[in-house]
Length: 406
Image (cartoon, rainbow, N blue to C red; front, side, top):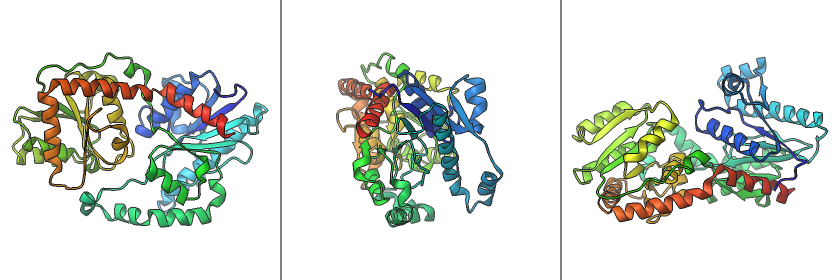
């Protein structure tokens, strides 16, 4: 357990329930560390103040205000990517100030930059405090079967990733001398971090995201009899593979149907795809749920969750499905491949042949639909695996790492 004399400063540009996955994760990390009864504060951008201080009434949060220079970075477009570094500089300065006010402007203060989670981003480091970054994820690109769909931006990022990381190691060496780096993407992320100049001795494997206690305190879903209802949920963007889930129904038993929860830029194209494949009676677009609780409550009637994403660094929806006992069907790629154990807690489909994927998805859906004993066994094992992902467990491991590496 962490030394009670330590002071922990968390830094993330967005800490919110409204600003997307990284912001939600940052808020959950702060709340979880608070439960360990240690002296911890959060530094974030002032755009989060109305929600955190006014609506949620969360204390011990400090805010970085916009300046003329930060506005210049944003509106210049060409320098916009420096916004994150600007925020890191201002936040670390504020963290050191807070440490000095407590008489702890030394290694007893941990400055932990939890977001953004990119292995490419350059961060300001404290010269007097203990520096931690992460969980870092990334270095994930389309599998070969989908690379013809890459935009030029995706293609150039993939080709230049390691050359630029090695250049970063030379040009920005002093920004890589951190005390602990939490790496959440397995070997692909560790290799990227080492190429960028981070010492392998400072890198600790971790999970990208934890699970809220109330989700794991719910009764596990039970699976009996035939159930042909499946769900796919998340933002409707190309790399989530929603089109693969739709195409799979053309290969599946006519009784199998799919509900799609979410909205996004690909919605209209997916609606057209459903019509082209004449699947109107089997694929239903339900839009967003009003709240996360409504979403989770709505999942009780399904047999499994289909999530054939090919560029998700983690996959919080997979973690949530497993936590409530809904077996996931995913591709063996990126984050889901680190979460799901094929044949035990769900199914993993190799993304080697684009044409075969819908057929393999359909086979997995059929097995879960018509073999309830398989679905129930996977549901039990998935829930058991998710028990290890409680935020309280994850943040306890981080606190232990602070001590081991200090």
